[in-house]
Image (tube, rainbow over all chains, first blue to last red; front, side, top):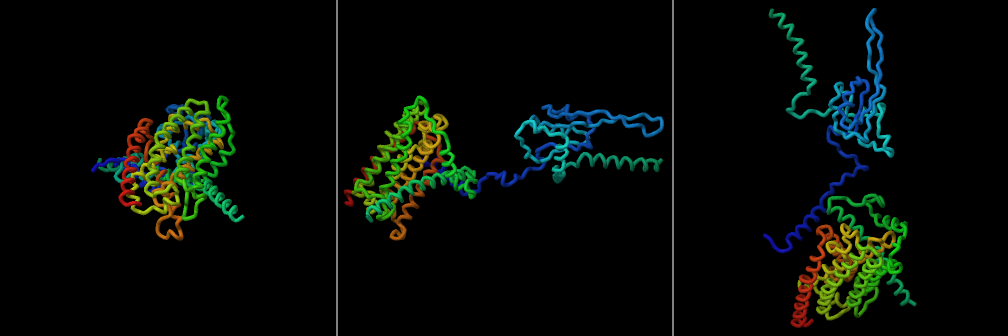
Length: 180
Length: 320
């Protein structure tokens, strides 16, 4: 049914209904937001895992990762052996004023040295302070949550599949030998 | 001496109401509008749900620099906010809250109230003209056009009630009121309320201030305390319009227990009307200038004249 002023009535109805409902405002500084799993707040670094392969710095679309390193020689452990060389990380810094939170560095790291932490309260008064050096990046590691549980029916994690296959493989040759 | 004391007391009460009620309406607007838009509005000032927000705003306005544009007409620019605000104070003096509870009961109350309310708009017009700013002038001219268009249906609607009651005294009108007037005078109520809104330049009739296109029209060049006075005038206007609507059309202090709590009824009705004013602001978009004029001349004026005819017939038939 339509009558003159129906639209006007509807407008009043919508606003009145809204008023009787709870507002959707997030009271952020008073109440912390409930972040979804895998939130990209800040990038954390496990320095011990880093081999200075430079993949992250090279893949970064914004060029916001700075890495300095030098080579260390590890003296040979056996008599007449060759000295080995090892990369040592001197500086690892991420400039979060440039970072666009694309997550490429986290995904590209072959040694799981980079992780996402959901912490987001690291605003600074000076833009230069947004460059987090490796000590600070290491500290963020304490805030990285455990990986979320997989969805029911989801494919198993790649690492587990690989490990299971490797275990199977190491068990099979024994059977093969037995047959022959 | 007791007479003098009584006058003093009445004036003080009216001034207190004049200072408190607009703030109350403003706070309701802050919070009700916010919740209608699924927000929460001010939350911090005064610690509990931002109840002191307007006080904080007032303190902020007072601290601001008093700037007068170089090209402005200094004197007119400076007194404009006072002229916008004071008429509403004067009007409040004549609005009855309960039997005997009135600043000053005038025989020509309705006439006085309507005449003085028209003056308030002149303040805005002065501000628009004296600012020496294109936007202000444009806004001022729109104010003038709006005043011209809406004053007529406003007065005609009020005249209808006066005719029905057979008196121009506001107290007399309330005493003559009976519930079936709600039906009989419904078109007049509608016209009076809508035209009053337009005269206050409240949304959806805020074409003259139209902050999006005229950068607040006549108030563009105002800042600090003078701007605050203009805004206070707007809210005082809401209070006056709501109170007048309640007194003229909704029966003032008539209601259950009117002997004990009549004044409460008037205030409650005034509050309800003021809430509707806020509600309309949230629900409706701004009218275009031509729509605004069309609504006045093609909608409200004929409706008001029609109401006058009905009232005349009613008065003659039932002999009020």
